[in-house]
Length: 192
Length: 151
Image 1: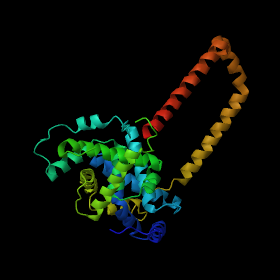
Image 2: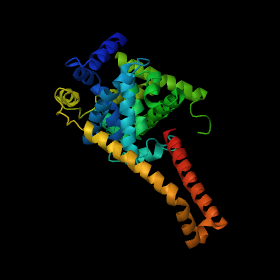
Image 3: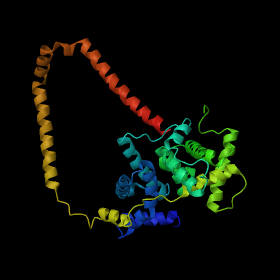
Image 4: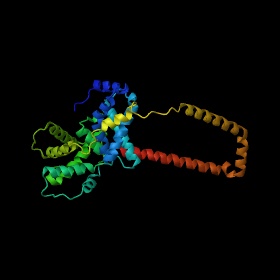
C-alpha cells in the first residue's frame, strides 16, 4: 500500500467531515494497520486490541474536526491510538516502560531456556527465539521498535505520536536492539 | 549506564551505525556481508519487520464506519423539553438553597460551634492543614511517578 500524500489526507478529511458516503470507511481501512500495530504491541491481547482499535476510530470520528493538518494524518491517528492504549495500561496498572540498562538478564530469563544452544542456529529457531524476546520487552520499547522497523516511521514522527523526545526514542531503540542481539549472541557467537 | 541516556559514547555510536546499516540492508534486500555484528543485527531487523499475526477482522472498517454513520445510527429521542425543565428546576433549587442559607446560616453555624467547640479550635485547624498537605503530597507523588515511568 502506498503512503497517502498530504493532499490525499486533506481530501479524505474533508470528505469525512462532509459525511461523504464511504469516506470514513476508507480512512479506517487506510490506518487500521497502524492502529493495530501500536495497540497490539502495547496491550498484547488481541480481544482488547480489537476493542481499543474500535474506540480509537470512534474517537477519531468524533474529534476529526479538531485536526489542523499541522502533522500527517497518520501521526495524528497514531497519537490517538497510542493515548487510548496507554490509558488502558494505566487502568490495568501495567508499567509502560522499564529502565533498559539493567534489563538484559531479566529479558534472557523471561524468554526461558528451552532452546538447544548447540544445534539451533537454524533461521527458524533464531527467529522464534527473537520473537519471544521481542514479546518480553516492555510495552513502550516493543511499540517503538515496531513503529520504526515495521511501519518504517522516522524517529521524528514517532516522537509526534508518543510525545517522547527524539533522543529518548533513539536511546530506547539502540538499547532494545542491543538487548535482542545479546539474546542471540550466545547462539550465533557474535563479537561484541 | 551513568551518562545521559540520549547521548551515545563513541562505541555506542559505532554500534548504532551498525544497527542502522543492518536495517537498511535488510530493507533493501542486500546480500549478507562478512561483518558478524551487522549479520546479527540483520537477524534482529528481520524479526522486527515480520508482519504481526492476529490482525483485525476483514470487515472491521465497514463495522466501525457503520457505527459512526448518522444515517444508520438509531434515531435519537428528542429530550430538549426535559433538559430545559431540568435546568429550570436546578436553578430554582440553587436559589432556594441560597435564600435558606442567608436566613438560617448564621444560626446553624453558631449551633454547630456551640455543640462541637473543637471545630473552632487551633487543633482542628492544624489537623485540617495536615490532611490537605497529605492529599496534595500523594497527588504530587502520583504525577511524578507517572512521569518517571514514561522516561
